[in-house]
Image 1: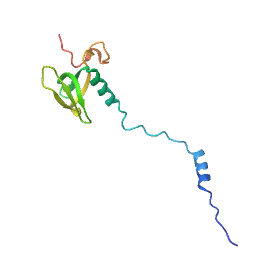
Image 2 (image 1 turned 120 degrees about the vertical axis):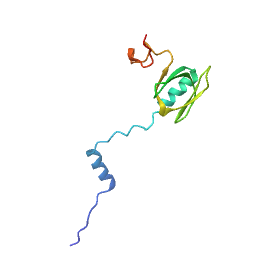
Image 3 (image 1 turned 60 degrees about the vertical axis):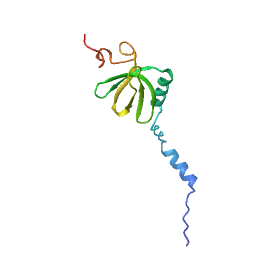
Length: 114
């Protein structure tokens, strides 16, 4: 007696597995380009910005240029600066210190005690 193995076709196997397995969501993208969009928007509008460095120093100016690792800040009465992004704690638009879009309220690190 000859026994013959009958194998299912690939499409039959995929149909059976497809109904049993739930499809996973694809992983989110590594980069959303939100940072690039923000820099471009501020550069085009020439928005005055305040950049706070890791050591607490503040720099006021307009973002003139950026790349993956640094930004160039144009200052009117002082030399322009090229800042490494790794040294920046945070930045915000000049004029948002109190009551604006800044959510830290009265505990803002740039406010001076009277």
